[in-house]
Length: 238
Image (tube, rainbow, N blue to C red; front, side, top):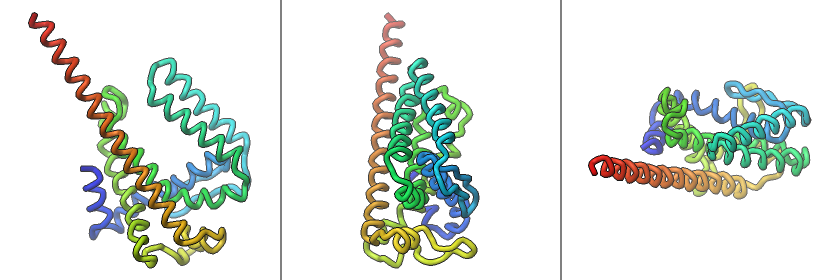
């Protein structure tokens, strides 16, 4: 349902208003990618301010925070925290240590629309948070899910349509900001149009698969809880 609502919002007449919300996710995608590469970045509306070199103090602070998340999750048996901590620590290690600085800039640029896909999927996945958690009790997931759905479709539809119509790619200049992200990747970093489209579409499809897995796991846990409740009820009746 969230995907359907997001699709209608991203393709409807209110798309400009929708873009005000999804652009924040786009810029956050740039910033998160930069942080994982050890580069300081501050996201804002329509632009992300970013440093020109790695700050290893920032990388150590982020690694410490992710390590703490993993350790606390392990102690509390919150396996979702452990999973997120391990995944993000692995990404940080690869991006900060494994990538040369010359490769981080195109990755950060790619992380704009890429962030709309990945972060949009994470926000939609908040619907499946553990009952009793803060997001569940405070009903915050109901606000995060539509933002995620709108962000995902706003990013994914552009590149899905570009498979058959290259004019859908937002090449050109943005007033007061220089070249658009696709123009920078193609003109400054030598990416081919076909590779650009294929990478975004592949990432989007993988995000949809991940969301489907979340849904299947949620249904499985729901059935398990239902069976346990039925067994408990029968035991009380006996």
